[in-house]
Length: 88
Image 1 (cartoon, rainbow, N blue to C red):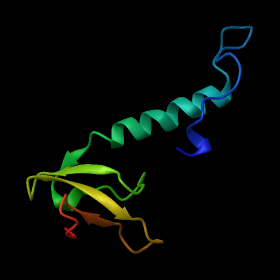
Image 2 (cartoon, one colour; image 1 turned 90 degrees about the horizontal axis):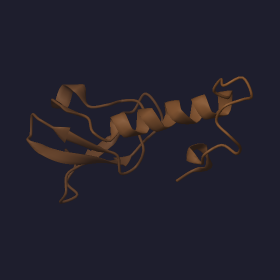
Image 3 (tube, rainbow, N blue to C red; image 1 turned 30 degrees about the horizontal axis):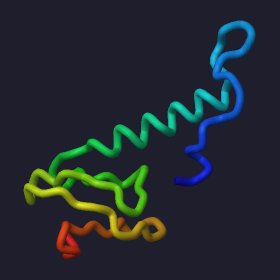
Image 4 (cartoon, rainbow, N blue to C red; image 1 turned 90 degrees about the vertical axis):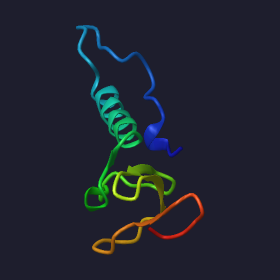
């Protein structure tokens, strides 16, 4: 994992009991990653954001899990493959 997912140093709360900004940002990134890891839906709704190589998506149109093989520069879409490596 990249350093962006490393937990911040120190206690998550300040002396007043409020969340520190670095911890709130880390929690938001972690939430996005966990939510992305459990997405499913039709081919037309494949994710276009929060992509990384190896990200999974259950495509209900083709009824199987697929993974991101590459994340090219925008506006080119990500390349998705099935378990055999075939582009889907």
